[in-house]
Structures are given as C-alpha cells and as structure tokens.
Image (tube, rainbow, N blue to C red; front, side, top):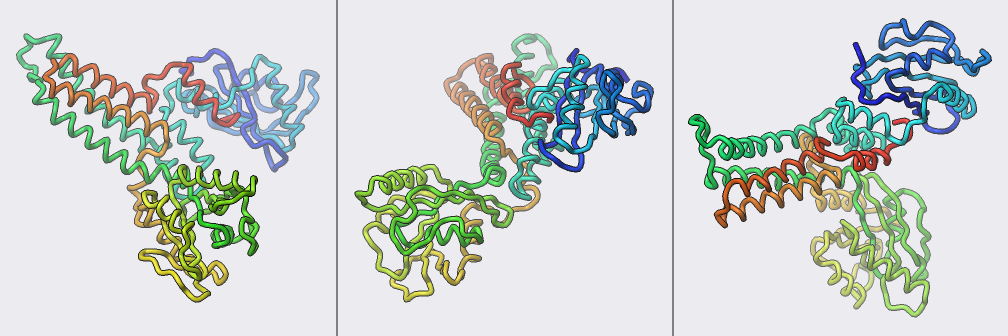
Length: 453
C-alpha cells in the first residue's frame, strides 16, 4: 500500500539509550527509508521483502567494509508508527559501532531526526492524536504503577474519548445555531433559542467540572505530590525522611539547625509518588546560612501540595509549634507527633503518633497520607481522567468560555453571539487532541520528547 506521509525527506536516529548494552536500535522513517537502508545492507534485497519481516545481514560502508552484523526489521506504510515506510536496524550494543551504522545511513541522503520527530510525524500523518503522542512519553517517564496505567489509557485513546465526546456535544449545539442563522426558512430545523441552549450549556459545564475534579487525582498520581516535611529544629524531620525512604538520606544529629537547606527525594507510597522535601527547622536565628534555609522552608510550605507538620510530643508545645500550626491551618496538612518512645506531653486531635527511632506508626501515617490525598480507594475507572497540565488548563479555559455563554444568555444576547464562545470552547478542546494547533506549537511540544522517539 502506498505511503500516506506528508513528508518528502527520510529521517534516522538511535532509538535506544546511549551507552553499552546487548543491542542498539537505529530507526529510519520516510518514503525512501527501505530503498536508502538497502544501499548499506548486505543480505536480502529489502525492497522485495514482505512488510513486517526481519532479516539477517550486515551493514557495510561505501568500500564494502562490514561495520556490523545486524537484524533489520522492515515495515511498510501505512501500518507503522509514523504511517511511513520504517526500518529498524538492531546492531550490537556498542557506542562506536552504533554511531558508525547511523553515520553510514545519514551519508545516503538521510537526515538526523529532531527530538520527538518520529512521534510528531505519527501525529501529523494522522496515525495518532496529540493526547496519544504525549501519553507515549508518559509511559516512558511513569514514576509508579498507577502513572503507567494512566499513560496506557492515553495511548489506547481512552483519554482522548473524553475530549471527543465533549466536542461532539458542543458541535451539535453550534451546528444547530448555524443552521438557524443561515437557513431560517427551512421547516425541518429545530428552532434553537436561549432557553434551549442554556440547559445544554449548563450540563456541559457540570460535565467539565466533574472531569476537572477527578483529574486532580490522576494529575498527582502522574506527576507526584510535593510534600513538605516541616517543624521547628530537632523534632525529627530528617529522621522521618530517612524512615520513609528506608535509607540515610538526610544528616541526623541532636544539634538544632543541622538541616540548613532543603533536601528532597522521591518515595513510592502504595503506588503514589511523593516528592518529599525535608526543610530546615523554622525558628528565629541570627545565623546567616540558617536564616536562608528558613526562608526557603517557608517558600516550600507555600508551594507544597501536602504538609507533614512534625511536632515533638515529648515536649510542651512551643510558640514556634503554634506558629507553624497557624501558618499551615488552611493547607492540606497532617500533624505528626514524633518520639512516641518518650513520655508524651502533647495530645492533638486527629494527629498521627509515630516514633522514627522505633519505626512505629509509619503504616498509619502512610494510610493517612493516602486518605488526605483522597487516593485510598481508587478503582480502575478512576485512572481514565486528565493528568497532563496542558490538557487540564485547556479544559479550564473551555469551561470559562461556556460560563461566558451563560452570562450572555442572562443578558439576552442573540444566539449568533453565543456561537462565538461555544466555538471557542470547541476549539480549546480541539487543542488538547491536536485538531487545531499551528506548526510552531506542535514543534515545541514534540521537542521535549526523547531523540529517536
């Protein structure tokens, strides 16, 4: 079957990570990919083989010197990732040999692919939509099992379907308005008025609000949760970090002010990734370096999505403890009473009692974190929502456009004015799946992808 590519040139890149390994893969894509690789391949005539077959042979230079013994996969358009003719050359996994094979291919009227250009071609050739393309990278960078599930739903078009369904409902309203405006004399057209448009728009706004609310969960599963461990000096913040990580990451001493800067690390908690930030103890200090650490700690509090406020329960509450409780009262916060191995002097309702020395209460704390993030009872269906920050922002903008429609209806504006905001919402949702994106923005999106992907 003839290629459907919109590109005239052929590209190539190393598709496997740079370094020494069992094999490396050089990927070639374009109308002339099979013909051009055939020039440097000694084995079967690749131009005569069937699609989706693998062939043994050698890559040679222009003097017929063997560069490497290889296996070559031939895939003919349009049944390929890019919808173009594609060849993948499996070489021995050495840095030099892989580079030499790539250089030989590039010397035959093939150019080096830009980062993400294979995925970009797949999108521009109509093979995948933009959500699928971004989900491919999410699969690669998934930090936990749940993030991988979300990414795979995007690859399988389940996430895209949410957007297409909303666009279809919007398009129905827009089309009816346009018909009423352009063909008012047509008897079989349903008369569409503000009274008809309003309930449909309200229903769409509610759908989008539900989608955004559920997308909060999938976003933090995908990206992780910024979690600041705060407290006055010497209450056990660094010990808690080390306990959750199960390693000695932060320095722990009995000297107040040991942690002078922010220390961060990632931990998987029942499949949820927490970016733990161990902050400097917050207190009044004349030490210049410690003072900088305290200011950074306060900044971390403002940016964190979850606060773990650690208090030493073996001592009476201090002014610093009370100040931190007040500072974080409106935040997503868990109060932790540490040092339960000592005589308690503090009791606070709904606090989690632990001992980092005896490692007691940690399971309770982990469950409390999941409950606080509303991630303790996730089911499979909870993963099929938006997790990409770009997607979520576009949906929010679409919701604002629909809210403008309601305002216009209440001000008794004509329906052709409503069509402007309805169409804007439809276009914004289209930007998520890539139905209407200009070339510059597309290039920018795919430039963040891996080379060879």
